[in-house]
Image (cartoon, rainbow over the protein chains, first blue to last red):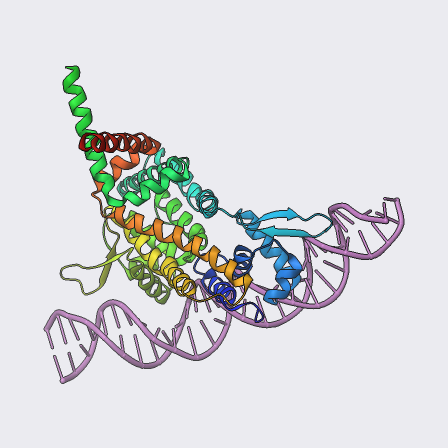
Length: 187
Length: 187
DNA sequence: CGCAATTTTCAATAATTACTGAAAATTCAG
DNA sequence: CTGAATTTTCAGTAATTATTGAAAATTGCG
């Protein structure tokens, strides 16, 4: 850890500290950070040595990162060991993370809500509760479906949409007007 | 907890279980769920009794939820105790959560990255690390700025944008064409 | 195959986080 | 102001999660 070059060290430490806020632990955060900034794939021993963790801890951490699809396994010619690298494209990474988060943190709740919404409330309190769940379901469902839709766009289109910022509104308004014009012409 | 009506019980239990995945604990998750579905504001004793937690635990949990701006304090006429309720508008809730997450989970990383990007890399490894950090910074910065921009739109505009899904692309393409036409006219 | 290299599992323990009851602090009606 | 009601703090303990070294399992070269 201490013989890492300064920028790498800073980055790795930060990911370790933030880990708990992000729902991963210090070890996993540091391992990911190290792999992310590394110019070449790393094997478990490289990581254990660089971060001064036990080999078994690194093994567990790598499994976790694979579960999140944040690192991919790579085999180097003439070397039996397993090497890991982070996908190069940060958009790719972002999408994997979002998908995985959705699967683990959002879907179970959507299922629960759907199940609750088809029940018949037993009393006034539950009737109200169900209304609230309905609102929550609608929001989560809409926003996650939308995310999926957007994620399916090309990176360029997404970048364009994002650079547009709040001026999307102008565009939406414009298309509304066009629709109205077209409707008038048709009439 | 067990005398809660069935739908409420199910909802509260789910939030307790999911809590750890969401970075809050079981207690906090359940308290929030209970307040969210409740038809009227609740005080700490109501909550402690309903969920069978100690009064002090409820106090800590409520502080945490206030920190996330997920519950608001309310005073009922002729009652000295503090009552809590969740904002009614789920959009509002979503935005508060996003802002708070950004402040706690994103901003610190952006700061660290910005600091790293103005440093001079000490060697090749750090030079590569810095490039990777640059990519990460760009993505995070762009997407969080964009989120801010969108959040500033009216709920109706956002809903419109979301319902549009991946067909935003068509709209973007359309505006591109309009721009080209306008440019030609001007020439 | 056989076996050395490599990875994984697991039980023990360390570290962290959650929860409680009691005591302290705060609040506000009278 | 006073003091009862209410909320917060805090030290102790319980529960959970992280980490390790050693042993077991797996892998794939020769």
